[in-house]
Length: 69
Image (cartoon, rainbow, N blue to C red):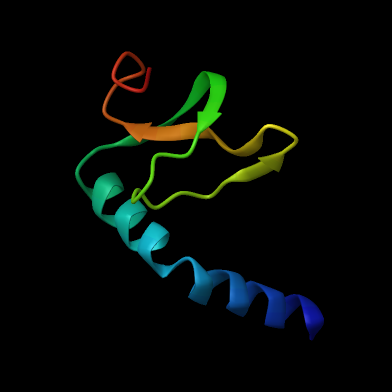
């Protein structure tokens, strides 16, 4: 039950992110791992990793790996 509640809260709290992913994947975008995790771009929906260096993004949706750099 607790796991279900956490999943629901996660989903609701990240609706902008999930909508952006849905739209980009429909347009042919794929997940690409970034060579180095980087700081979050303000205003861009993202799932982040909290580290001692702050919030970071390690994967990006892009049409090509070159575009993800």
